[in-house]
Length: 491
Ligand SMILES: Cc1cc2nc3c(=O)[nH]c(=O)nc-3n(C[C@H](O)[C@H](O)[C@H](O)COP(=O)(O)OP(=O)(O)OC[C@H]3O[C@@H](n4cnc5c(N)ncnc54)[C@H](O)[C@@H]3O)c2cc1C
Image 1 (cartoon, helix red, strand yellow):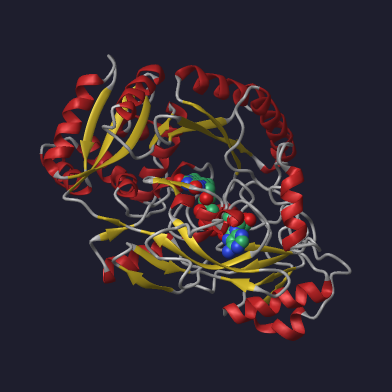
Image 2 (cartoon, rainbow, N blue to C red):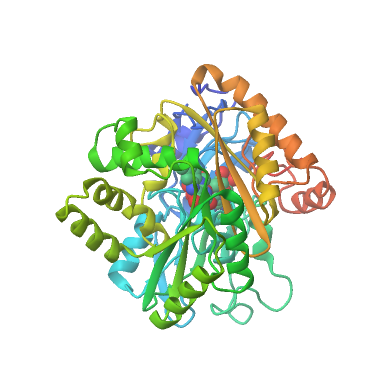
């Protein structure tokens, strides 16, 4: 399962021209266990080389599948929608800079990871931070934003602008003096950046990402309780603007998996079920985490108000990484070792909300012992469903998924006071891969029929009908030969 095959007949001059960075029949194992025939994976080291690859693809009518780091785990990783596409891996383009303090933005290339941007800012601008996702240290900041990923400070596509794009006909475009300004994403007239998010019109080789100024108080609020009460409390808190960042709420099953993985990471061995229960006893409640930033007095006041409006049965706590470390030391001293361990294990999760990327979120994957999630012992398909905020929507979406696949886990992302996204994971063994993919097709169909469309699609999920006429017309104008990412967001 998952082994690459060479597509016969896809012979062009890749090895002759690009020998040192052309890998034939690359490792094609993906976390979601999708199988594709991938003839080549090309890792061009410069933008000029990317241009040469596109020219070669044009001359040979070979389709390309651009990825930034190819860590789109659960949605297809680095694999293309169609067999035979050559993977254009942009991970070697990894420059960061210039940092522009006036517009609070920095230029990044596709290969810039969450880890490398964090290190860059720590060294050059420790008072600035970026919007971190839970997807791990080695994922691409730019690739995630192009897929409209969601971070702990909001939707990532809103952070990315000033795109530098190569088109299949050999032309390119980028921000122009007199038209664009670093302080504003859109110029006067058509804002063309939006054409390159979740589309297949060109290859993005650079862009600017927005940064934020770190605040006097940066806390994470943890909310726990029954689903209905958690959702109603959060809804009120958003409506009254006590919180503005997204909240990630995990169901008990996901929290249990995460607790197991966090302890394994901390101890470098697998914990027993009893140890997980002792350190993470809240296994019947839903747990949410949200970042809150500002002046200390303002954050304190928002915290007090949040406690006042919270539903019965909900428990709220707050902290930051410094408070957590102090609490762990103190708890250790008074002999509350399970609570102290819990604090230490949770630290990297709290760090995510405060702009510190980590691999902590990957700990919830079954059969993952660290390293590359694509090589985890168990497969996982990720999917999602958009709705408005409300316990009924959460339960309906959850029931649709569970009805088709029992071994599933859920997180809800409250993006703001309007939008809630149900993120589900189907866990399965390699032997169940076919059945899991079949189940996911039914899940997507049923979710759409129930009024819960997706915000993002995996490589095995076909786009819903509706906008294909317009999309096709733009595609024909930009890429009439269909060389860039065929099938990506196409119905
Ligand atoms: C445990 C776990 C937790 C996760 N948590 C999160 C999370 O918190 N938030 C989140 O958003 N996702 C999350 N994910 C999903 C996924 O892993 C991330 O979105 C990840 O950032 C995507 O990989 P990447 O950044 O390397 O992007 P890539 O895989 O490089 O890019 C994604 C897609 O964008 C397109 N693309 C990328 N670069 C270019 C380019 N330069 N030009 C043209 N098209 C391009 C391609 O179609 C590509 O397939 C999670 C997954 C797992 C398994």
